[in-house]
Every structure is written in structure tokens, then in C-alpha cells.
Amino acid sequence: MNRFARTTLVLGTLAAVAMGATGCAAAEKPAEATGAEVQHLLVATGASPRPFTFLDDNDELTGYDIEILKLVDEKLDDVEFEFQVAEFPALFAGLDSGRFNIVANNLSATDERREKYDFSDPYIEAQFGVAVAEGSDLAGATTLDELAGKRTFGEPGLNFTKILEAFNEANPDKQIDIQYSELDLQSQYKQLATGGVDFVFSDKVVYTGYAKGLPTTFSQLDGDKLVEDFGTNLFSAYAFSKQTPNVDEVVEKVNGALTELREDGTLTKLSEEFFDGLDVSPKTLPQSTK
Image (cartoon, one colour):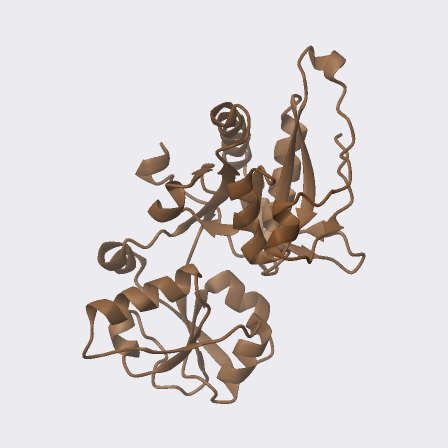
């Protein structure tokens, strides 16, 4: 079984990433046993949102995204992963500079991102929806049109925010009131429960993890309509820096391991473990990845 480097918590600025902060060395795989040189790859994550990626009570990195990659690493004799935690904006700066080889952070593989980065096959099929306070007249909403004139939080650059911004651009007469904020998700849901906003646009598994015990409900939106109207990508995948040596081969190897984990039921098992019985593993791959 492969060993993994203890996570290095990197909470510095983008400049620190660009200058190449040093992480812990990963345990060496016996290259002589495989007859091939081992390629060491640095995997970065923001360690949030839980349960996709997070630090447990022992300050060890885990989560659905992370445990999948650990199993992928076990399947690949000539690849060794080392994990590092960084602030979310630094993840993309690290990919751009080539400092980070892979980012594991529930990233939506949008067309815009594909222009800059390579992506693996998806390991999550999202269930987008809106969280509302109990008793809200928005309960049961299935489209963004029903949210016109309502207040919600938005964080610049996030996929959810970009969808809302696209809706507003296309519908100048029925705007959604986006209140830009850097509040963490737990605080956003608490604000929702006390009337601070009317809804939170989210994914079902994120809602399940952060809204426990709060008087709120979740309504799933029509995913097909989101795709049709806004080109919304419902799949999450691992992002790869194009500066990684032999990146096409690396992505192909990772995809091969992901296929095995999907077909033997491992992705479903991990999903149910981390998401309270909910299976978020893709049942079919989007056409663009086949």
C-alpha cells in the first residue's frame, strides 16, 4: 500500500505560491520494482467545502475528493501523489505557474476552465438546487425564474455565482439580488435560517453537510434547464496544470484508474460514506469526456 505525505497547511498569499513554498516529501515508490521512473505530482486542495475535502479531528486531510485520489495513487505504480492545502484562489495560481500539478476541490470542469487546464473524467454529478428557510414560498422552486427579486449570497468567481450573474444578464427585468460576500458556508446557512437572505444556491451534498440542525429545506432545480439555458456543467473533475510533464499521459492514467473505481462500485461506496448515503458518482460520462 502506498504511503502519503502528511498535509502541509499553506495559508500564505498568491505570491507565496508563485515563489514555490516547499511541501513535505512524499514517500518514495520503488521504481526498480516497476521498472519505470516514478513521477511525483503535487496535489493541492483548499480543504473545503466539507465533505469533499477537509481536515479531520487529527488534522489529517481527507474527504471524498481526496480518498479517491489516494486509491488512484495505489493503482498507479509510476505515479506518486503528495498533498498540500492552500487558500482557494492560490489553487489556480499554482496551476498557472506549474507549482501545483493537480487540484482536487470539487471543481466544475467548465469550458472556460478547460481553456487553461486539463481535466480528468468526472467523479461527481452535481444536484444543484436552492436552500430556503422552512415555510418559505420558494420551497419547491425548480427554476431560477422563480427566484427573481429574491436575495442571496454570491462569492465572485464561484460557479454558482456565475450562473446567477448569467441569469441577471439575460433577464434585466427580473434580477436576482446577489449580495457579494466572503462569509463561509456555515454562516451563510445560519443567515438563511434567520432571514438574512431568501435562498442559498447550492449543491445538495453541500447543503446536507452544512445545514444540519437548521430550519431549512432544499429544492432541486431542473438540471437539464440549467444546462440548456446557461451551459451549466453538472460534473466535477480533477484539474491538471498543462505545465505538468507528459500531462496527457498522466490524465489518461488517472482516468483509467477512475474508470475502474467507478465500474467496481468504489465511487458509490465512498460517496455514500461521505455524503450520508447519497450517491453522487456519475452514472454516465458527459459526451465531452468520452
